[in-house]
Image (cartoon, rainbow, N blue to C red):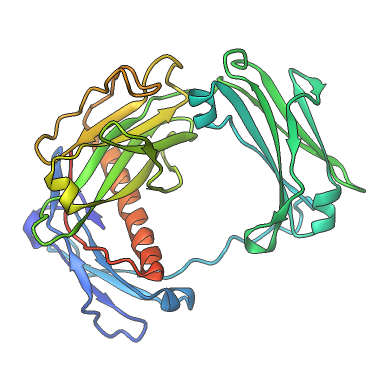
Length: 356
């Protein structure tokens, strides 16, 4: 991806494999311009086998403003190293689950214990404290299971009433057998909060497509906990395929994809991307953006939409730096998404995206 360049029509991309041989199966998208910023990007589809083997790929950008071609090497990154001085166990206390807080009015907190030694994880004792007092009410600690990267994981949850939990100090403490206790603390609802902005990117040329990939871009929110869902017409909610939030300065952004059929799109079926966040009050709807074939204006939700009664969305155009970060996020997630679909055998069409 290249951004903030001029002249706009003099940018080109090229790809080479690990043997420095040109790759033909690449696509350069038409330039995107918004708020005076030029953005261009190119993609290449690679096999999952080559990616897992860490084969490098060269992406070269050519432009008159450069003193020469600029090349970057892309390959599967190594997993982060584990410092030798870390405790036997790792502990993570997460903020309340957004979907539980706003849909079920409950503050459900997860305390995750993990380690490479299964016995140490199983024997660790978990203690919850609410406003510095030990509690055993509405606590559920699972037996554990093997997770990614050879780590055994246990999850302990604490459930509180959503209406009375704001400002509550929560501590999760874990006593390691033969070791020192470790703990994490948070105060519910005391983080600096910023509401999300929602936009939807749709393919600009749909003529040759049988399926359409809608990309929901959720930006400018803080803290990072957010719940993104899709709604077709006034039906139930669909999860879509949503990436992890990515930091953009002090705020976060996330991308969610939804695959829809060309037949339904031509029927002017409406698709809504909905973002629930801690900055939104319980009685108000989340940030929402709606698109269909006939209109690009957001639809006001009907009273029948469960828990989604009114809408007050922030539709401001992103600043230059925020826009660049947004498309970095969206582009990176789409590359990972297409790689995963290669494994699953889906047939995905690539095209230029239009943000609305």
